[in-house]
Amino acid sequence: MYIKRDVIKNFINEINISEESIEICFDSRDISNNSLFVALNGANFKAARFVSNALKNGARYAIVNETDKNLIEETSRDKCYFVNDTTSFIKELATESLKEWKKSLGLNKTVIGITGSNGKTSTKELLLYLLEKILPKKAQGTKGNLNNHFGVPITVFSLQENSEVVVFEIGTNNFGEIKYLSEIIKPDVSIITSIGQSHLEAFVTEDAVFTEKIALFDETIKNSKIKQCCFFSCEDKYLKRYHTKDRCFVVGGNESALHLIKLSQDRVLFTYQGVNYNFGFDHLIGTHHYLNFLNCFSVLCEVFEIEPIRIIKEAKSFKLGLNRGEWKKTGNLNAFLDCYNSNPSSLRASLESFVFDNANILDKTLFVIGDMYELGENSGKYHREAGSYIKSLGIKNLLYIGHESKEFFRGFGKEGIFFKNVDDADLSSLNLTNISTLYLKGSRGVGLEKLLEKFKK
Image (cartoon, rainbow, N blue to C red):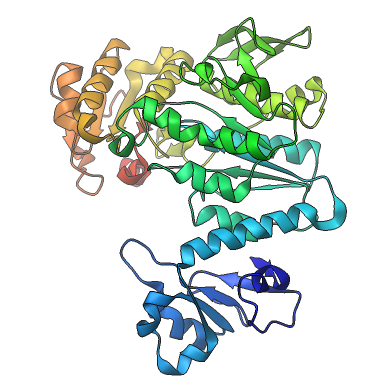
């Protein structure tokens, strides 16, 4: 990750850098020679305590909070520059760096922002996959889910000058974070995938989630010169009421620019510019994946003027990985891992698509369900509803991992096998004689994927 000398001198004029750019580092354990170390504080640590080590390991300078000056050894202070707040400093630095990137090489560059309660990472990955197929080596984007106030600047500082498109995933778990991140990236184009029951510990209601997420559209409209710059599906009951429709490209009903004819678990039929299209993924099942596809399709057609047939051809082979609807072999069992994250709406969507595609093996599938985190005071209610919904699908083989097992099984209607966490799970008590398949779904922190090793034994 590099930052241009002229950008940083806008904020710290006295810093002595002769090169055109300097590498920027945030981890004192991974320092490059002659780099700039920024001491970012976390909830439970002060990075200023590691400045001396960073300088000894090769950093040329360090940026430190003024209030942490007393934590810096006297011999190191001549290589430190002190600011009011390193997190705010990084925000300003990233904002200016992205502005400079957009002007570099005189290219027509595009910044895309994506958020949503569910599907933002999948949408980002699909859009980057299609951009690479259609515009090779011209697009970059968020790695993994580095989508917070640290992750977004990391993506900015990693941008190559000759890239023409950057796709940012931005997330939130508290009020104001979408606005904060949107102010950094100042999108030309944005997608909101869905409004659902995520991070309710902070937001409490889905209405509040909607208000938080829509800040991405507000910032896009303020900054973008593209006529239709905000993309969403009116299949979402919250997004369809978004009031500023004149700058939006909407997927969905009869009044939409892209009209849905039929949406099912394994196919979507739609009309775009008077032409009917019929599309199905080779490797993905679920209506949510098709809604994500339609948002990507719309951006590529409307913003980049890509031929629809080209997009459909390239999208068919797209696969998700990293425990997002991923199949793995564990011993004699086939395992379906959808345990990157979980909330009530994503659990329901995942189960619907799995049951649709695997109806013939439900009695041979062990469903391993884990806690859904950050649901606040209504957590018990949402876990009861999850248990009730799973019962309605006719699912009988169940294992629960987490602290909400009591509420989950209240909804399911009878007690089942459960463990408080993955480490305590003793699978020797399970009868797997007639089981050929595992389905795993839970919040990231539960770590359900670690069960695969236990199932091998």
